[in-house]
Image (cartoon, rainbow, N blue to C red; front, side, top):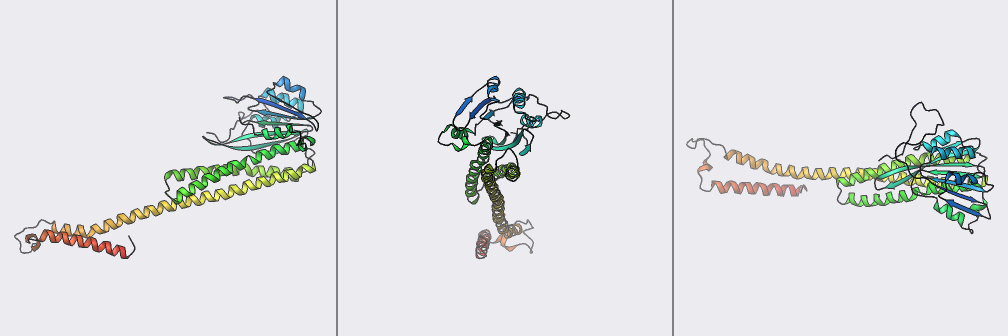
Length: 356
């Protein structure tokens, strides 16, 4: 399956063009949270026309789109919030690299969410538009990861998020996206521990396949987290009228979480490389053991083949130069006795040299 759900316009398409996606698309679910310090309104499953009454609310408005946003929906959002066409094009053409763009009317960032499934790991795109009094989020995946943030907004006791402006909500969503990587990393770590026991016990070809698969996932996570670290660092360090100074303190904590994810990823990646080396070394040692046994068997049969070859020569029995053992009464048993003594002697010799 495709790791990144990449979609691109044909070459030569004008910048900022919004075209409907071809092929299967996910259904769209629109959720609006409209709140201030004293009130909170939540509406899910709204149509585009029903959303319009919240476009110019005097409260903080969070509009979340779950699924594949249509060009018609993005056009309406772009007209209401003055969203830049290039940013909206990046929402349509998923598979974008994590980035941060600052426009006149809003801030736009693309975040990447690693998701593990039975078919393998894939990366989902989350697009965030932050402006004065509004936040628009678009998640192309099926699972709603922002449910805990809505629960905090519903909870009247947790008033900090409702007393703050949209930049704090923006931080809360970024924090969820970054923290979603921890369960993925933890699951990979558990699998690495299981593979480690397998490698040091009875390694099989399946062990190598599992190590390679886990290492591939770790490389993908590193590829996703590296630019996200740069985006968060830019949000912390650069002055922007969309981010209040107090919110930067929380963004630093989010940046620290990204560093933790990177450290865990690098640690597990080194572990996977070490396990692969151990596996290859184990297979090499096993092959050496097999070759040693075969070599000893061949070595034992060399003198036996020599003896059998000598007594298997068909010469004239009447010749005075013929082998006298051929006419001996005990010639055949004596040959077998010599063969057995040679085998035992060589086994004792191998044992004394610690070759057995």
